[in-house]
Length: 634
Image 1: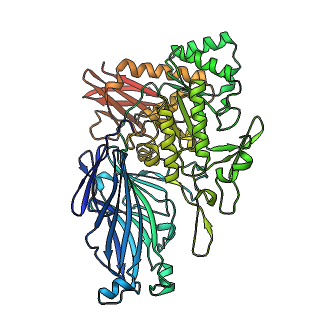
Image 2: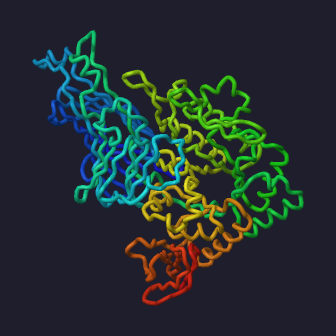
Image 3: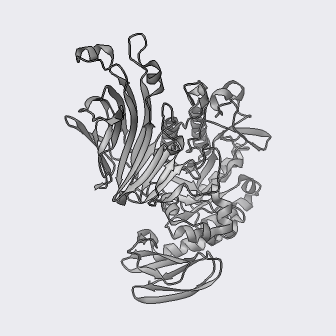
C-alpha cells in the first residue's frame, strides 16, 4: 500500500523482530513481547497467554517457530508451545499496516505422546485461559470501542464508547474493536465473536484496569474447563478431545503516517436533485461560485444514482456534463456508495440470500426506502456483493470520470448470522449467533481501496461511532458524527468531551484524516468546536450555500495565517501557549516561526466577556456561544 514502508523481519532462535511503518514488533511465539511505536515502547511487559491447570498457572516452554511465507506486504508463520498437559498451535499473519492476526488452538496431549513421556496426561486439567496485554499508562490515556450496544446496526446518540481512561477502567462484553492509546501511539484489539469462550461473566469478557504505571487489558477466554473436555473426560483415539480454537487480531497505531489533504478539507457535500434541476447557465454560474469560494471537492449524496449503492446515474450524459463543468474549475467529484442492496439490482432474485446481512432468526435487516420505489436492505460484505460493489465503483470512475468514492457505513463490521457466506457461529446447543466479520470486511475495503487508487482516486469512509484501525487503514479520510448530529446541534458545547474528541473525532491517533458531520444552525458553531481539536467540519446539510459561504470565510482566515505550516497545540496540552481565564471558554493555538494564532470558543449557553493570556500579553473579547473567535500576533 502506498505510503507504507515494506515489511521486514529478522529471525532469531525463539523470536522474530518485525518492522512495519513506524512500528516494530518483537514476536516471542504467537504474541509480541515488545511493541514500539516511533521508538517508544508501549508494552509494560510482554503480552502473556496465562493458562491455569487445576487452578495453578503453568509456564509455557520455548516456542517452536516455522516460517511459512514472507513478502513486502505480509508474513506468515506457525508456532507450537506447550504448558501443563496441553499445547498450543497458532498461525500468525502480520501485514504491512501492522495488523497481527492470530488463529490459535489448544488441545491436551494425546495417548501416544504421553505414553512415551512415561505418564498419562490424557485427562484434561486446563481450567483458565486469559490473554493479558499490559500497556504503559503513558501509552493508554484514551479509549474507543465499538459497538456501543450489542448489535452494530443500532445507532445510538452517545459518545461514551470514546473517552479518557480513568482509574475505574472498563468492563465490557466482546467488542470487535477496542483501542487504547493517545495521539502518538496506541494498541487495538480485535475479535469477531465469543465462539468457544467461557468467561466467568460474558459482560466482563474484556476488562481494563490500572495498576500503578501500567494499564492491563485482559481477555477472559476460559474461566472453566472447555465444555467438550469436561464432558468427554479423557482423550482417546475414538473420542479425541476437540481442539479449542480462538481467533483474534492486534495492531499498534497509528496505522500509517498522518497526512492531511488540504484540498479534500474544502469539500461541499449536497444532494444531486438540486444540481440536476439547474439549466446550463445556472450550472455554469453555480460552478463558478464554488470555485470562487474555494471548493476543491464536490460530493453527491445517494440520490445521484437511480439504484441504491449500484452506481447508475439517472441520466448518464447529464451527469457527465456536471462532472465536466466541475472539472473545468479544478473541482473534483466524489459520489455516494453505501451499505445496502436494492430490490432493483438485476441479480436480486438469485443472489439476495448470499448478499444480505441476516439476524439469527433468518430475517434480513434494514429496508431504507427511496425513489424510484425500492427497498434497500443491509448487505454483508462477507458475501458476493463485495465484488458487485467493486465492479460498479470501477464502472463509475471509468465511465463518468469521478475522482473519489464516498462510502456510507461500508467500513462498519456490522454483525451478521448469514451462514450462506460464512458469518455467524453456533454454540454447544446449536443455537445460531451473529459474528462481526472484520476480516472479510477488511479484504473488501482493501480491494476497494486498490480499485479506487489504481484510478488515481480517494476513498472516504463514513463510519459514525466505529473507528476500526484495521479497516480505516484503507481509507483516505473518515466522516464521523451522524449518530450524535441532532444532540450536537441542540447541545453543542455541553456535549463536548475532550477524551472523545481526541480518540474518535481527530484521526491523528489512527493516521487517517477526519471530518465531522454537523447540522448546527450555522456552520460556524460546529466548525469552532471541532477546530479547537484541529479537526475539520464538512460543509453539509440544510442551507448549504449559506454554510459554504461561512466555511469559505473561515478557510481564508486559516490560509491568511498559514495554519498549514504551523504547529497545532491543543487547549488540553501543558505546553499550549494561550491560557483562558474565563470558565467555559477554551482556546487552542497554531504556532509558526513568524507568529501565533489562537482560536477561542465559548462552550457555555450565554455570551461572555472572555480574557486570555498569550506570551504575557492579555487579549479579551465578548464571545457568543459556540462562535469561533480568532486572535493573531501576525
